[in-house]
Image 1 (cartoon, rainbow, N blue to C red):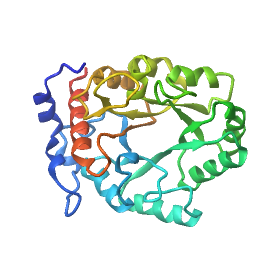
Image 2: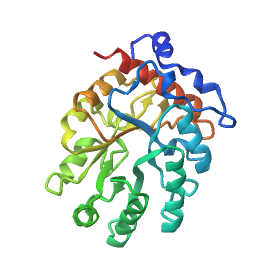
Image 3: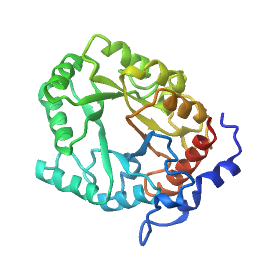
Length: 286
């Protein structure tokens, strides 16, 4: 459980951004941060599933509003989807670049045990220009995945989904399934789902470091089958140990906030609070 004073962390993190709407905003600049890099070398960003109910223009504003620039693009129609043509994908990627936003991964992309379906997903990631695809494949498809990472030279980050996931409940289930295959097949550790699967998220980050390519950051209100999201610091996860583990391994993949509380129609306040809390935690780590 998080025991650090929220008052001090809120001061450090400057959470006032949470109350402003998307329209008419000003982006927080580097001059507003206490340090030139409050993230201490980590590539902290946003999994755009957080803004799944918003068009790409508003998603961009939301990401910038909380002072971040790295994203994992969710494959929904209002962002960049598998149903978009290659030209449409490139146009939308240019929108991101024009705003100063850098896509580091895509996903979470579902995959069937079917080579054509998997190839379609790899072509999507290739068109967006990312080096990593977060995915939820069928467990029996790993031999096809092995073939595709060699052809496309795109890393896979298989996402674990907790105790209700029949394929990959925890990061260790992913590691067991992929250990004999190409090292470009790795994992995305979702810290909330990992804890719900009965695994310490920080410990799994350390143990899976060699194949850890993406991380979903969040907090949860309780353990168990049901996924109950919470703002960062309001839940039960030991977030301090998670950030300490990422620093210890000098993690250079995307560590993206995936804020899931509510129905997705008002994510900005909770996201901003989570970002501010994380800044405070990192500022306090030696």
